[in-house]
Length: 527
Image 1: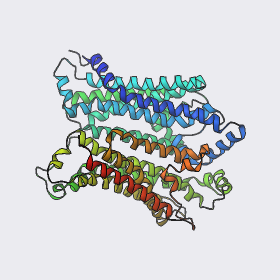
Image 2: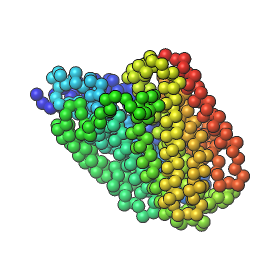
Image 3: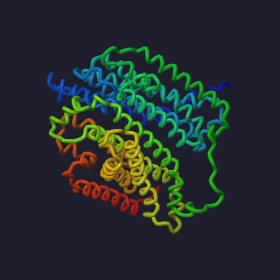
Image 4: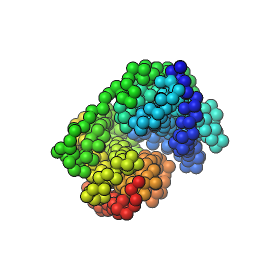
């Protein structure tokens, strides 16, 4: 029997079971590309507005950090390539990771893989089927986004090159996920490893684009290779050969590790817990802390690194945000009197706040994962109150991101050299931002607690906040629309006329969402 025996059947089955996962990611990436074209045509209809856009984006290194180097912002296709390449690739890579881990390590955790392996199925068939499924899904994302974008008037050469980068990113991180599935002993561990690599790749690419003299780093990150395709200018396809080579190497390593590891185990063995509960584990609060401890440690370290990188970036920009720079002129024209380095860090703190919200939502999603695995019913069958169980995780979901933000803010102050970026100023700014982040986490508490069927609204709130906070001002959206983002209401603590009213309002809204979650969890059936 071949090691790949049964792969076609497993692939067809996996494709049927995972179609509902592929469709939303395909829609999201396609919408990202199409809305770039439509928005550009309506908002930047004349040459003057396009020149203003180019100056605004070119003067703010934070945009390079998020979206990459803008090669052409005077055409709609160039704007689309700049806005969609990095984010579209990130989404496609995340989709590929989810598909591969779901159909490899997660099946081993549930015991389904062992049942399949007992029939006429080769040892490498499940991994091959999962990787091929991720490849096919990445191709679908590229094809659909290309076709729909061209139907809306996108230039074929630019659009095809852009969509190809989405597919290439999906291929690469399918390979990364295949390796992670062999290393981690559980699906959660494997997903964390693969997503960490994806996030690090995105951050290194952003740092290479934003920091002066760091351009050489672009060749040390997979997401940098796709950016070097440069769809809007040269449409160079040869960097995709590096992507293909990386994919093949990752898949080969994954198959080599699969042949050597014990079935149902990862190369990093799971550490068994104590035979009897003791200390913190004797109550629900300690149990929640134990369950979330790996995430707390990982996210705290991530924010320490992120804060250090942001602080170095703010200090190394020099002339880019100097008093004679376009960045300074943009603030002067708006009538704002603010230290330029602090203004730049305010944008970086908004980015950190959105990332912290992802952390908090992930913590709450763990509650739902425990529920569908029938691990909430046993403690609730005893004397444990429902509010205590939900509160044990909700407290971590709110305080964890808050602590991570404080770590990041202090790290910025320790690595930055500008006199305005003191620890006191940054800590106070982070404290002012925490209620806004708590609102986004509160949405997840409300949905998981009251109606988990709509839990995706938690991620939608984070995505909407990112779009309104970072891109909303570029499109000259009305204040009432920008105000939907809670981060829009966070004041600048160095402003002598700062009012605490908006902070109080954010706290009230966050408390409202949390209250909805607790009231709903008290009344609804637990699955």
